[in-house]
Length: 142
Image (cartoon, rainbow, N blue to C red; front, side, top):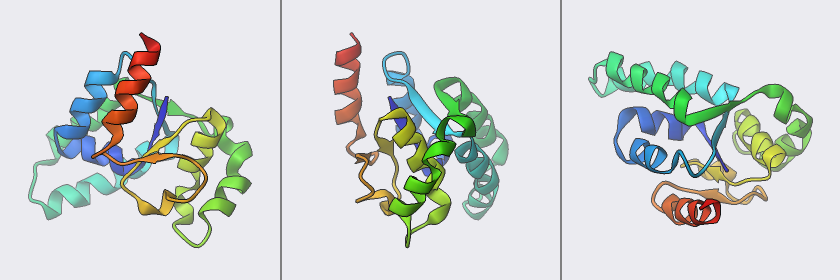
């Protein structure tokens, strides 16, 4: 199991590497993201696409497809970890607390490109290294 940050959802909608990893391991590893990560991705993706002069429709459709690959973690699941998560991510980006709280609630690492999570007490994986984790997790499931 792995909790995804909004920036990973955005990367999946923009390119092929993240989406390819999600598709490759979807049947073997549970991908999770807090409800607000999907909202954040949907909010920021149009401005990123406009800045890069990329058509919005295909990327937004990919974001919708991600809902089949990445399970939504509802606030009820992670809300009891809010205080702990806010304390651990304090002085960084406090808006990221739901991702950390979801990881704490589910007892699993985070996939992110955001250095704000480094040193928060939960393992973090970046895209350039996450396949090491995914391959090992997939072997455990087999």
